[in-house]
Amino acid sequence: MRIRQLAFAICGLFAITAARADIIFIADITHVAEVSPTNLAPLVTSTGAPRPLSFGTAIFDLNDAMTALTMDATIFNIDVTGTQTPDDTNDNLGNAHIHANATATITSAAAPVVWGFFGTPFNDTLPMDIVVTPFTTGVGGRFTSVWNAPEGNNTTLTAQLPNILGGHAYINFHTVQFGGGEIRGFLQAVPEPGTFALLAMGLASLLLGARKKAE
Image (cartoon, rainbow, N blue to C red; front, top):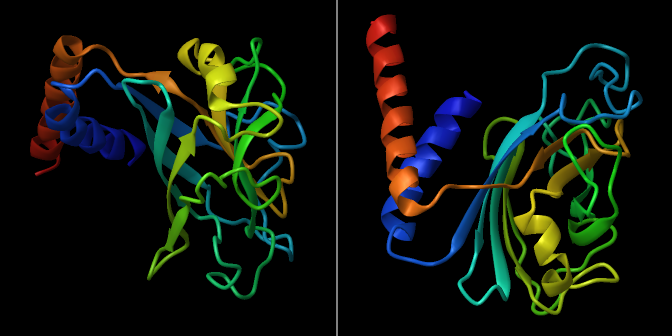
């Protein structure tokens, strides 16, 4: 499912970005990407029963002037309102942030919060751009916002550009069960337009082949 979502997202973005100098990042947001043993415990409800694996995808667009990072993230099986699973609180979303530092990698422990867009700390203030759209059916929702240059948690977008461009930044969603983070995904830069087109076509071909095989 995540591969299909990323493929369609990349194909859709190609027509928009091929003629622009913006830098596009994608993030595959998963539970297994959390590295702390505490954060990798099994997902359970408040009564101890197993709950569905949470995951998500995100696309980021850093504008040509590098003054704004636009985010479009969708997460699944995390309760973004506190009412999507009324019989359970463990999956309730508490906070959501971008984390980064010069040493953050897929195997490293948590990096500091550099920009919070849900819960605490909240740094999306100049102006406040966050829009949360809960699923009308199912559990999860979509988050769109813009990290503008002056915003940040004791930092700024400008100061964090080396970490973002260097692959040392990740998006993290924190729940009641996993206060340190339930799902995270590193921002990975999408190749230049020429390579981008080949990647999009390759992913589309893989999906078409898989569909035909299933028929």
